[in-house]
Image (cartoon, rainbow, N blue to C red; front, side, top):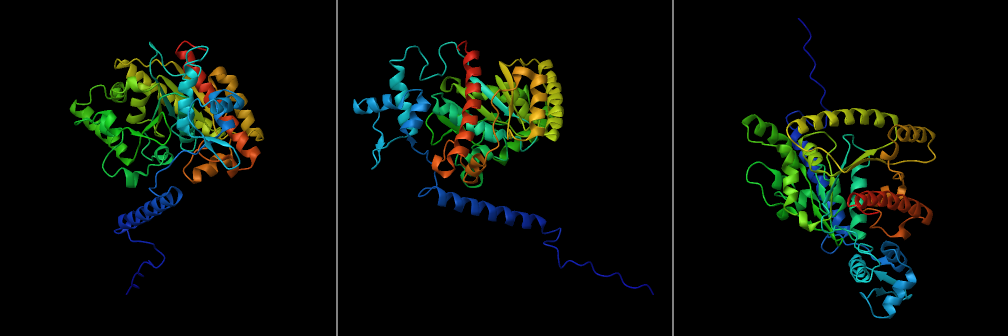
Length: 405
């Protein structure tokens, strides 16, 4: 008689197959509740983020004037009243800086010196930030660009098209708690009864920056489109983002779209809407090899879309070097390789790898939101200089597209 088969040892198993969904859901709920508690602790009393105050020196730099000129405006009683500390330091809110821009624009030497946005005849710039490889710095690039442009006086709409919603979280919205029933771009681009895009736009704590948040609901567009195509109801599906944005075209100068890390229907629709494209590149060999596939697949998809009648021309396309370490010899070789191949299509200013940027992200903030005193002066200044230089290059591209220098 054969020995009976031993019972499988399940003592070290966390869960059975049947209970895996419950196990995962418990972990998801626990994580969401802890993140919510963390947010309430960081941003009391109503768990809403606010933008920090800027020193007079920072405000002057943002405005492109001397600190002494801001002091004179204050003493003359012109412009907004800054907060004055016990040490007689002047602190300006982001709203104060926008008020100063409006005031200074009235006496500017030429239009746009302080309010650089669109004028008559300028088309809205729609910037798609993309790469289908995670960890390329796409969301970090998108968030810092959108905030910097708003602080410079542009009217900006940030759109989180990534179901993982990191761009959304950086702007103080927690999808699990704040978006229980819709509220993403999916509402405006869905095939059955789409909502007006204005209904999903929310103001942020930064003047001139509005947000369309994201969450997992965006994946519904990836599921709905094949069904709609099979039934002949999708039409030119890749125009859906573009058509939705036309509803608010007069309200913004620039739209920044944080695209999902995949070449799906959402990315294709965003690519069709974009007037400018930023492709993030982490200068490591595996990332560059992955980018080769990304570019080839993107070109093939753009051909398909163009054959369907879409205009796939863009004002510009640039590569952004992210998480760059200047002391890393292999990275420098890859950067030189990319610049040799692509020339001016690689932005001059890279986004440096910095503990200041990553540490700010731990509290769901960008570097523009944290105080300089939270880091060593050299670390903060180095990271801020790289971000400002990168964002300034993008701003120059936008101005050139509008026929200005």
